[in-house]
Structure formats: structure tokens, C-alpha cells
Length: 555
View 1 (tube, one colour):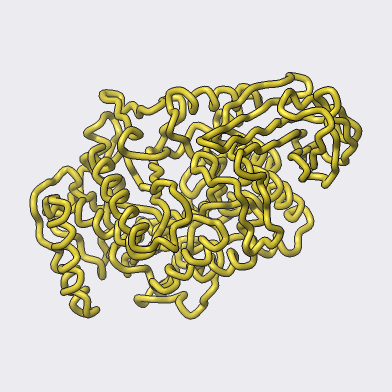
View 2: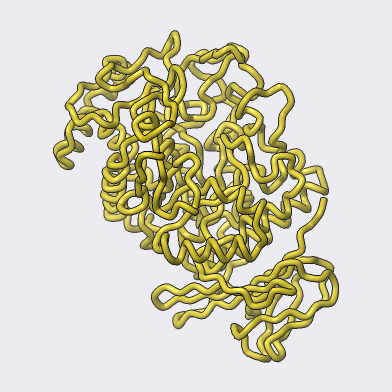
């Protein structure tokens, strides 16, 4: 498998307060490097497919009918995520945020659209926003997850679905007509045929345009009463509507239920699902609710506050690309989903840019847009995901290049579970997006030397990125074209950070320009080969067996 020649030559972090000091213990790895969402390295997982930490919760609600291949629950849960955090897996990868697919209670039944039985293992078929899916764990598990994650410097992002409920099944009745529509199905020809419609057949669409008071669904009332929490839920809803002044419309009920995960558990962000399929003012209100809830959590839990970062909101506007700047074009209408709405948007364009552009074309263009049209915001780049049938490297033939381009590109990075271990994205016998959602390949990581080498590459780049905000949040500038060397610089308040990065570097002896960032005589450490070098006349000479060099100031 071809390794792409890369140099990341030279890093310095200058702060008037102190030098960056990183603790060696991976289980409590912390540094004085500030966390910056624009530079975050986010790990995205299907909760059910990542790691089974508690086999006793694998079957619930009599979900025992045999499902089509990779269409049923496989046992992954919150406890499994906790286990891998405690083992240091994420710290070793340089991951500082984890995004989990929805963990709310899913429909109890199944659907069969002619391709076999499908259950809501993925989390996007919500039955009750106020309860956790028992296959994933309990609220005590969620509390522990956030506590353990925060202890390890990792933020937790949950997936928020406001656009639709789960499908209707024999055991899952439809929400009332005052809450949902069941047609027409979206055809995406313009704004209205994207927003006021159902995504697919049998996926009831929440009437997010409604501002009329509606009562709670009778089936939800019945469920809560059976669980002994009806009075408490109603009391909290009344308090929410009194405090906010919002009408008791469907979207505001859901916003209240979602915001409870902020005030009760202290999650750090939401990834919002199917953003373009609702009216844009939904997200302005959602941001307001989330910001208020996050401020309340910080006030009530001062010892649990990680830093002064704001609540993170990243949106999924399917087919949005960074080329659009702040706008998504419906054809008949352009909508700004950034201002007063989202911190960031998932960038569906990155995989194409990574495939078609040179490193310099890719990096300089992204830096220019992020530091101009999108200044103050960011995009979330990815090479593969749970529902993109055309990833950057579907056959997993370019895992090294995937890491290099994703983790070194300006913007926030999304590592889809198994990107770092070349988990297969093609599984024989599957239909549709099921092929993208196989079980995490832990056996390969444990036993396959080839997989282990790929993982080491992702780990080294990921940890370097997480330590240096300049990589994702900085300003890009090319230093030399041959070999290709560039710098990134970042500053905010009293903190500043600078890196010099080069790609396609000769294996063995090499001399590399580091620009004016380092002074002659300074010692730098290549963290990729663990080699110390000295700056002389603006360059460094070194001999390493790798095509990658990661230099930082040697303390």
C-alpha cells in the first residue's frame, strides 16, 4: 500500500504565559494547548457498531426477528465507548471529541421495505426523545461517559433529530396529525419540496413550521404514566414553555427534550440531523435554547466546566460544500445556516477536493475561505461516513493519504470509526448504506501488522493535530514548492501557535527549510521518528526512514 510522502516540519507554540507541556500518562493526557473547536479532531461512531461493553443489554422490546445483513442491533453501547476511553484508545488517536449517533429510545418494531427486516440500530428512528435506548445503556451510563471523557480531555457530541420521528410499525403508532405529516415525499426540486415533505416513505415528518399549541401525543402520555414519570415530565414542560414563551408546538417540545441532555448531563455539542429539511428559523431557536441550557449547566456545575468554549452545533445539510460559503442553494432560494444558527457545517465537498486537488490547492483554498467568508465558523471535513455511498477511499486502498489530507487540512476533522484501521466499507450481502456500517475491526487492530501500521500513522498525525490549533484553525502559507513545505499560524488573545508542514519528503537524508518561525540554534524534535534536529540558517538536516517528519520545539 503506497505511503504518501509527507513532512510536517516544525512546530512552535509561543505563549506569554507558559510553554506547552504534555503529560505522558495517556489515561489523563492533558496539555496547556487550548481546545479550539475549529481544530477539533472528532471521532464519529455508530454507537451500536463500535464496541459491546455490556452484553446484558443486547436485546430489548422483543426485537428478536432475524434482520437483514447489518440491519439489526449488534450490541455496541455506551459502556463500550467508556471502556475504550479508559484504555486510552482515543487519546492515542489524538481524538478530543466524540460524536455518537442518536442514543434516544428507538422504535420497538421493525420495517421491511422488501430488502429484509431493519431495526433502528442506527439511532435515527426516535420513539421517545426523553428516554435512552436500553440497547445503548442507561442515564447512569451516560453520566459516567461524560465524566470519563471530560477527565481525558474529550468532549461529547450527541446527534439531534428534530425533523422526523421513527417509522410506523405494528407496535409503533404514528404521532398525531397535529405533530406530523406522512406525505408528500420530498423530490428536492426546490425549497418547499425539500422542507415540507417526508424524506422517505413511512418516515413521518415533524411539522416544524407549526407554531400552534398541540397536546402531547396520547401514546407518549400512556408510556410515561406506565413508567411513573408523567407528572414530572409535564411539570418540566410547563416550566420550559413559561420560561421561554414559546408556543407548545411540536418543534419546541423536541427542543426542550434535547436541551435536557445539556442541563442534566453536560454534553458539549449537538450534530443536527437533516438540517435543510426544516425551516431555517428552527435552528436559530435551537441555538438559543442550547446556549441558554449550556449557560445554566455551567452555572450549576462550575467544577465540571472544561473551559470557556461555547456550545458546539454542527449541521448536516446534505450536499453542502465549503464552496458555498455561508449559503446553501436550493435552486430557488439561498439560505445562510451559519449566522445565529450553527458553529459549523459538515462539508460534503471535502472528499472530492481531496481527490482532485494537489495539497497546496486543497489547503490554500480551505484556509482562504475559512479565514474570509467563514471567519468565526468552520466546516467538518470527512473521508467516509455512515450514509455517503461515495467516500474518498471506498476500497480502503489509500488509508495513509486519507489520514494526511483529512488531519492536515484547515477545518475540523471527522474520523469515522474504522477510518484509522481501514475497516472495510464494502461488505458482501448488504444493501444500501448497511455496507458502510460494519462492526469495528478490533481483531485486525489486535492481530494484523498491516492494520497496526496504518493505525500508527493516524495516531501520530492525530496527536500532532490535537496539540496544535494552527493546523485546523490557522492561516496557511506555502514556504517552498519542492519539496512542498508550508506554515500555519494561529493566535487568539495571549496565545499563539505556529507549525511548518511539508509533504512529499525524501526518505533518508534530507534538508528542509523551516522559514522564519524558528531561530538558528533551536532544537526541534521530530515526533514521527523521535529524532532531535537543530535549526541552522533557516533549515534542518536529518536522516529518518520515514517520508513523514513532525517537528516541534524540543523542551
